[in-house]
Image (cartoon, rainbow, N blue to C red; front, side, top):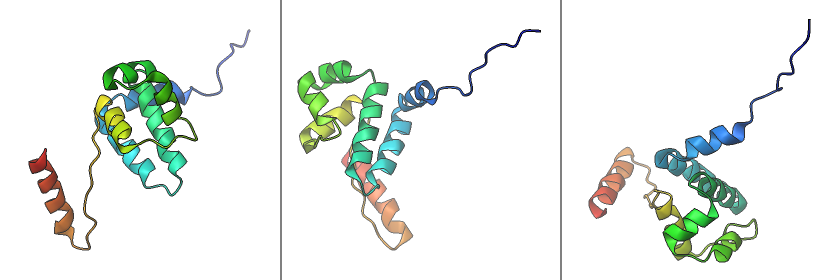
Length: 119
């Protein structure tokens, strides 16, 4: 009897990119990465979302940003400007949002309500 070669594990990357195509999942992923003390974690997450949404070329076309500039911005040494960041997020179906951090439970709810009204 011949043994078949079976992969030790299923590659996670294709599954990860498929999940990140959903803007809600991408937003949650970026929010968690933004809480990390190391800014490189957020940049890596942003690169992953960009790749999931079609890659640098597609995002560059959607945003009107220069492709080479986008590569530099999303590199491990990158430091995206707020304008570039919002364009990349917008092209990915995600928006940047600020929420007040309060000790009372109602504060977060009030911030979400205010954000919805502003949108």
